[in-house]
Amino acid sequence: MDTSLLQPSIHGRDPVAAFSLRATFFTAFFGGPIAAVLIHGLNAEHFGRWERDRFALLVALIAALALLVCAAVLISRPDILPSLPEELRQTKNMRWLNRLSALVIWAALYWRLREPYRAARLVGGHRPAWGAGLACVLIGFVVTVITVTMASMMVGRP
Image (cartoon, rainbow, N blue to C red):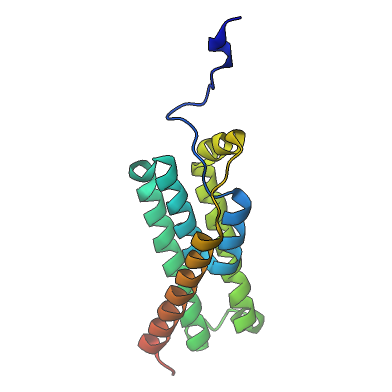
């Protein structure tokens, strides 16, 4: 039998174990958009794609920070955009917008890394994500609080 037929056909380097999609999803959901970028950045490093994907990660990080600043400004100064319905200005809805943006960023970064994720799933091994996931959630929470606080302080009350 020809053993070359049994060789993996996945492009690039050999598949490596990474944090599972479920772990990255829950990290993004509970940690927000910053945590989504961080956990995908860790996986990009595990996959050996840091150099290739760092620009996309940077763009996602800037988009996440911009969204947080916009949300903070809209909550602090509702008079800036008076045409925005009152329901959308509530803090609860801004939290849901934060989670939604985290999942959109998660999906966009997954799309860029889908081949290595599929290869890692074929290998069958996943890295334990408890430590890294909780660290990303904590860092994401701290950065979100600092960003929102700083943006609210800079804009001020009317």
